Structures are given as C-alpha cells and as structure tokens.
Image 1 (cartoon, rainbow, N blue to C red):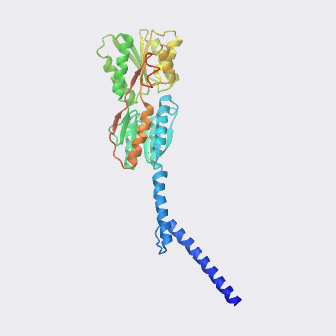
Image 2: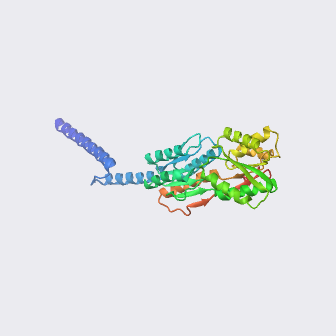
Length: 345
C-alpha cells in the first residue's frame, strides 16, 4: 500500500514537472516567434496580453533618430538653432545627433549629410550653405527615403521636404532700411559677409542693395568675406576703414560682421562716427547696441527654426501631411529702444 502510494505521488510530481516544462517552452516559443498557436485558454490569454503590451510599448517607447548637420557648431547663432532642435526633440520624444565643424566648410557639411544617410537616420535637419553643392546630398537623402528639412537657408530646387527660416532677401531689405535710418540716407558703406558662396549672404546683400538703391547719397564701397571667423572679420574691418577713409557705415550680413566692426570702432574711438547694422542677437552684439556702438541688428528666430524642423520631421515619419512646406519665421529689428524688451515681444 505504501509503495503504491509512493508510486502515485512520484507520477503526480513528474506529470506536474512535465506540465511546467511544456508550459515554459510554449511561452518562450510564443514570445520569440508569435507564430505558434496553443489550445490552452490560459496560454491564449497570456499571448493576447503580451501582444497588447508590445503594441503599447511601440507607441510610447519608439524613438525616431534624426541628425542635425550644423554649419558651425561653436557659433552662438547655430548653438541657438541646436537648442531649438533639442527642445523640439524633447517635446516630440525623439533623439537627435549633432554633426558639424568649428569652421564653415560646405564639403564637410556634405560629408556629414552622407554620414547621416549611411547611418539610415529617420530625418535630417540642416541648412543649404551652398544650394548647388548641398542640393545633390539632399537629393541622395530623399532618394534613400530620408526626409530633409532645411532651416535658415533654403535650396528650393532640391528634394528637401520643407524649409523653415528667414526670407533672407526681406531680412536684407530690412537691414538696408535700418541703415537709411541710422545714416540719414548719407553713407559710404563697407559690407562684411560670411563666405563668398553662402547663398544666405547673397540674398541678404541683394535685399540690402535694393533697399538703398534709390538713395543718391548712399554707396557700397567694398564687400569683404570673413568666413564667419571673428579674427578675420576684425582684420577686414580694420583694413576697409584704412583703405576707405570716407567710409562711415558698415553692414554685417551675418552674425560676425557687426561685432567685429564694433570692436574696431571702439578701439579706434570712433563710436558714433561709424554707423553699424548687423545680423543676429549674439551677446556681444546686444551689448554694443546698449552702449551705442552698433545701431541695430536684424534678429532671426533660430530657436523656433530648430524646434519646428524637428516637429515637421516627426510628422513626416508618422505619415502625416505637412500643413505648410515653406514657413517664413520672420525677423525683428533690435535697436537701443527695444533691446531689453524684444524677446518678450
């Protein structure tokens, strides 16, 4: 009787262990392949529960991976764009990798765009430093199924998905109008620009020229490139003021020129004698405006550009149609009158 009881107990234990073992293998197979079916109702419930969890996780945990190719990672303006990019990434629940150099080089930008394409990212944010040079790289990204949103400078003939940024011609026209006001329509002007190939500068300078073309007493004497380098821009400002003794105004068509001019004018004790209109609200430029060294600067919205670009890339990856593919972010003329209030406004 005892032996019979023991035998029954052993068989019961073995059957139980076998049942547990089969259940574990079935769950593992079901978890790994989701292809096998089971007739056990509890297993079906577990599988359904697991499937729901997986779908929920995909909705909440999936992260799109974007790349921001910056033309100048250590420049205050482009750092503001990057801040906007990262803000947009946080709001949209995506991740962004930043690639860029410490000097302006269109070939390096093309290389970084190609690196992003090879990495199979979900989207790219950049600017068209030279539409002719960067356009083909943008097209390669689009052909690989990677949407590109441009900020600051557009390449309308490329396959970019959208553009958000300044109308650089209009911004240049605004700068020209500001120069008329600062000089009373009488000026011998020197222009400090970024690079010779930078389309941004070309459009701004064209707008500036058109704004002053009907002013008979206003003349552009020279235009010098500084490649957005402060030392170079400072040297250019010194050289042009020496070469053109009658020069009484300087237009900086990007974020470096007005600050460089301010440095030179201060050093030469010519504040108020040389009128200056610039671009972008770097800390130094704003200080020069407060102190009356720089008359005004055309301020863009770099933070908005960056965050909006990420928002648009996220929409595109979700299969949503963009309401607009061309967004003019607008500009503000900052002078001594509104230097403390323009950001709030």
